[in-house]
Length: 61
Image (cartoon, rainbow, N blue to C red; front, side, top):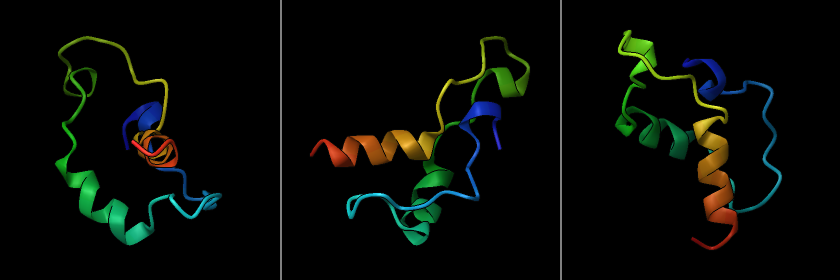
């Protein structure tokens, strides 16, 4: 959806702590729309938001 922060449809859950599709569907609408996507400057994210959430969950955050 947002450049590098787009969902990856070919994504495979690697760890039990990874978000399910249902969990991601609940969280995704709560994330802010990036400024660059709205034409307000900035640069695209370097990582998929879902992967960041999975990494935080994996580390026990």
